[in-house]
Length: 585
Image 1 (tube, rainbow, N blue to C red):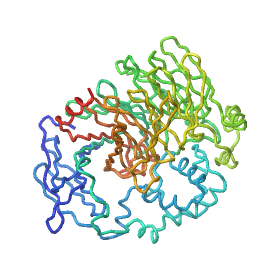
Image 2: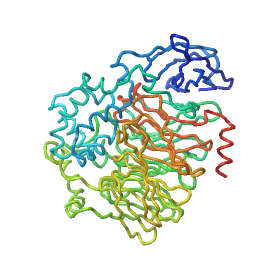
Image 3: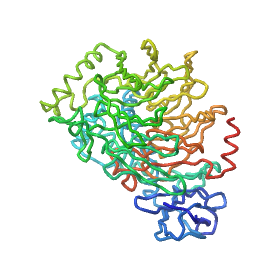
Image 4: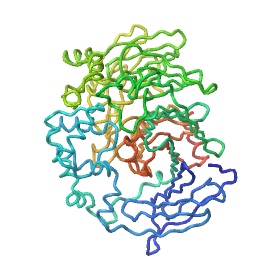
């Protein structure tokens, strides 16, 4: 995408009677792989898509819930007015709604609060729940096959709940009951109102990255302004450079370390690799080191990888003990701290000295502790014996603690979440002593510190965010403003430390959510692509928010391709960015 001589597309969106329609998402797409820019129509129906390639025709899409989707091919830049009609077909309107709205119908049918929490935490592990692909009517046998596959990918459900869920799924998602429930008030002025004026100033850019068998898992913004992303399903590292009015995509294949498909978990009769995956090492999380290199956790390879952007070469480091390196962060001494999700460890690696430490975290019970000690044996056995028909293969065993998010406080102390056990962990960076703290909410996931040393945590299965003070050990929480309450699953959050604004993944609602701690106010930004499952967030120098669409499987995403996306809450207005910068100084 080059915009050396920039064009624009502008106009007004009206209804058939000539009245302006605010809040319409106007998206223009071009190129292969595609780049899409989305703006919102304002109060008077006006829209303006700026900085488009000159002399290029675009695909255009108009979209607002409750109005007929409209698409146009070969639209040239210039002045273009559009007429958009109300959607009167209730089934079509229900299909426009984000996954969380359908998901709520299912949650209402699970009466036991503990079972409901387990379901939320386990059944939205990798993909949206309530999306078009999950709403199909299936036989009990088909549902049980899905539960078996879920268990093989690490999602565990109690037997009693698995027995009840097929009926719950089919009843909740039956169109004859779901559509009327979801479209109450259709046609009234209060049905799906437009987003507020502040949201309508935003601009969203999306770049396709990878292909239909890819999974863009985590991203990171490099200080040089380029974005890196890891494709966990295809062992690729991607770089997206959108500086200077152009978009350049590059990729590198990670070394396979001599491992089979599936990595340390593959090569046997019970290999847990999806049929379209090409992963030997499974890159998961990545961060920029103080020297500008990138470090990556290789979840399936039980290794860390270093990538030098200058030489474009990889170096692998074995972890030796523990399983499934997950999320990593750097401490003030340049040491890497990372969670080992499958074996309940935290690892520390010092690139300067080669020192490598593994710290075993406390399990909640004696049974968990024994099971974790037995993990290497079960992985070995699975390579020689077909375990798919037994309880372990079906995901019917006990739930194990999963060290997940990790961050480093201003004082150098390491904090992490233990997802299934609803705990925080504190690790002393010098003595490696561990302290575990129960959270007053469920599903703590990817956590981040702000500039004041306060720790922000998303409650994945609780539908909230929380602030934790490491000094006083006090928690304060806020429910997400996504309706219906409890239907979203905030996978991650990040804090823009220049302003201490908290940004949250609306992982099940196709949104990004901003929270201002000083005023305790939320702002919800709808995203233009349906089935946008977000996992990690980062910021650029202009205060724009970056994330990736990481739904797995990828084919469930609208359009069938993973995307890296950027949300500019100021809509490209330099004055707004200057004001923002001054307010943070």
